[in-house]
Amino acid sequence: MPAPTAAMHRRRRSYRRETTLVKRPRAAQAYRLFGLITARTNHLPRLPELRTERFEDLAAVVAEQPNASAAPAPDIERHRVVVADVFAHCAILPAPPGTVFRSMGALRRWVALHHTALLGGLAYIEGRAEARVHVRRARGAAGRGVAGEGHAAGVQRDGVGVEAAATQIFHELGRAQPAWVVPPAPAAGRDAGEASASFLVDRSRWRAFADAVAAEQHRDPALEVRLTGPWPPYDFVRLQFGG
Image (cartoon, rainbow, N blue to C red; front, top):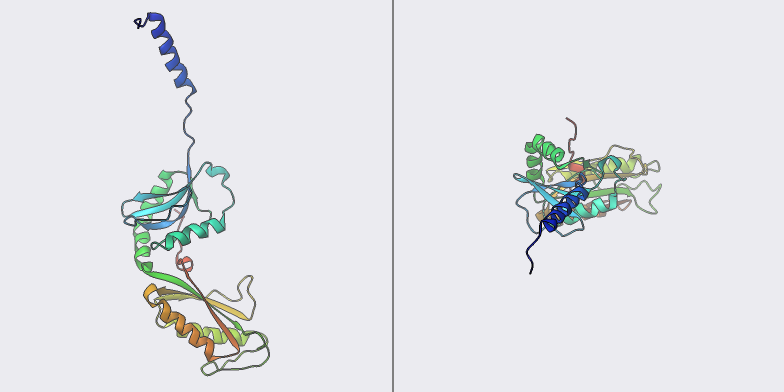
């Protein structure tokens, strides 16, 4: 093989310079936040484009987003699917749908600022799930004014009796729970004769809680008492993004 000539060396250097000129910097990435988990969590579900970023003893569940300045409308259904899949494996502090940080540095600073509160929140909800209880007038019960034992308010046509009976039911169910919240009435998109509440229930006591809800259902035939869940603790998490 002939030895490289000076002309061949010049062509190689020129090629390297041209290659350098066409190299483009990687576009800055924004990050959509789904929630916070503990860094020790393993075996998370494999979801498309999902990743975790560790910050000491916390980890953020995120997905890359190419352009933060033109963020698309939040995909609420996808957000719920991701949070629910992570929740099936570990405790998670869910972020509101559409929460986007412009850079990993911005996310890191936010986690550092709220580190103590986030860690405490995770410890509080560890091993617990959200239960939602809905109370409304049973079909065919309108106007009967039936009041079962323990629900003296009864069920009236205007729905006031339903809310009074529901409040009593929520108090009974909430006695053994660490926390429960009742949405203000009347809630948007909800009938005047319907009331709902969320409870934070220990996973090991879920069956006992479901039995307690069923007992309330049988107490007054004029009421329909329905349980849904277990859900991630959406109603018990309020992440702060100011400051």
